[in-house]
Length: 124
Image (cartoon, rainbow, N blue to C red):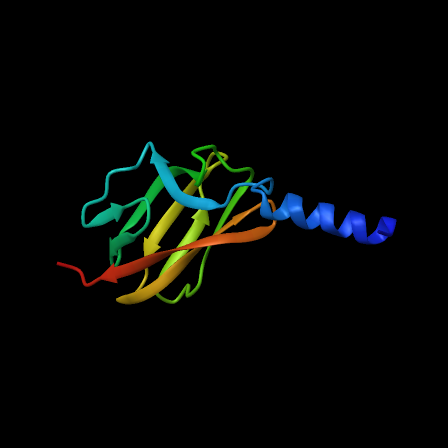
């Protein structure tokens, strides 16, 4: 067997044996600011009322329970839901802009690793 084929088979075996880095599982929140309306920050879903902004420290948790590397969050539709950096590292501010749905895109180490569905609710 040639060296090139042997290397390719070894690389394939490593990739399929679970040696790759863990994948994204969910978000964990800490130090969530108070909001006058609805702001439900769930591990796998977010609901926020139109006109409400909430700040939280946010960590991305891998499927093996470890914390993921550098984190960046972006909205798939900033006309419905906004994400802005907070005052401290790993802090973000979520804002309900208009009634509708969007996705919170989760990026780690410059790769998109997951999405969290977001629902912006009407004001009560």
